[in-house]
Image 1: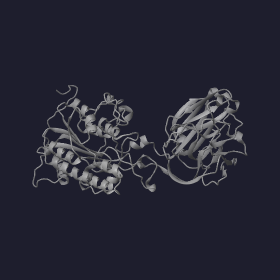
Image 2: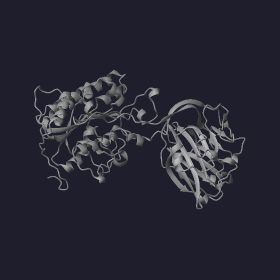
Image 3: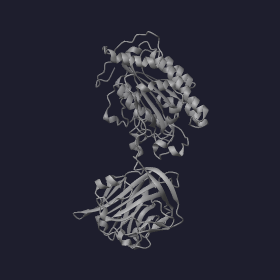
Image 4: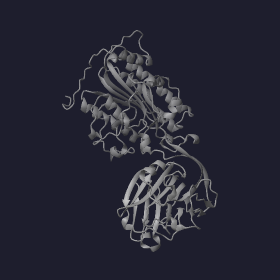
Length: 572
């Protein structure tokens, strides 16, 4: 008995559409060989799903392989060789769960093969969603992996296969069933080949496994076309990989974004004769910041030894601090750091600084994968923490503005031009310090050390408005036409510097001296203000989109309470 809250007619409605639908069916016939002279009925077909999931297939690898059967689908597909799996997954199980729930790991709670903390009761599988809508749906699943079947095959008709070839053979048998509505096949041979040699076509067994998979795809699609009721059915074919695999990509192809991580590089093909070709490539990432940059690592710093350090006190006046930073991997081989200073004007930086008179001053420091503005004035202390993570391995622009209005002093933090956090600092008083301005390391008792390139540092004696911060944050340098140029107090490009001095191109010539070790200068060619991984992921298909696409195709009413993270992709 179907749910009364939904209205759905199971039987297809016959409607003559002339040339349009004839073209749809004939397109499918061209892709999959058929019996010559077979007639096609011109009707709306009943929606059905064929889902093929292959583990370990890198999108960039399958694109270059010999895949004639998949290639024939592309003129009527929404497809990408740059789709993405879950960046935070520690095991393929997390990516499987993404595919079959339509939500990410934050909601379903699975990051590895441990399901003890899973939230699958709150975020059930796509099969449950479909069954709730139409309890007569015939849903079948085939895999050679017991773990896969134990998680996803308990409430549907599932079969265990011996290997990928047997998965293919069993799928062909299942496609002979008249009432089947949703058939999933899970393939592992490509993953196993990559695990034994490497996940790239340069390894012959990996390339062969991809091409074998393409052969299975061809046979399965031929079985779809050979169905006796094929002309009255409306199939959506989804072919995708659950995840990529480890491979050291060429340096010139590494853009230091999520798209250069081969472990999350997948492919996705959504085929229907109704679709026009819609290729989804890697999105525009941003401009390159190219030059020779100084590395601020360990106790290395640049300090204003000779010059007017009072210029860079924040006092009780308006101010703006800007800089660009590109983090390297830290001591834990990730981009997370424990509070090292980036720029500041205070004698030292440590937990009990607020107990000592020489702790007055300000600092911008890293914190985990985000950053903080911290200060002590003559009346109080505090910090404002940005809510945005910094992009990994690419340039970020950090901006701090201080503004007083109607007696209330507010600090605003911007990450790559976007407002991240605001906080009131009225009670901190005047933030003046006898300490020298420093870029890089500030003394501390806790072994807080950074590893980053810092460049294009600017300090202004005014608070730049938010719209100005946004407009100029990803620009390099500062031009006299800048609307607040007259308020510039210092500009240190830190590009092409020598090994002893960081030159100030601002109006006061506050050149900085190097300390804490020898300068290391590297030639870099990286993006600036690239979108975050989360933002970039929205531009290409992801594992979480598969369930959403299926729900849409099967006309299952999507409910807000499901909290699906995926989106529906449409053919042109």
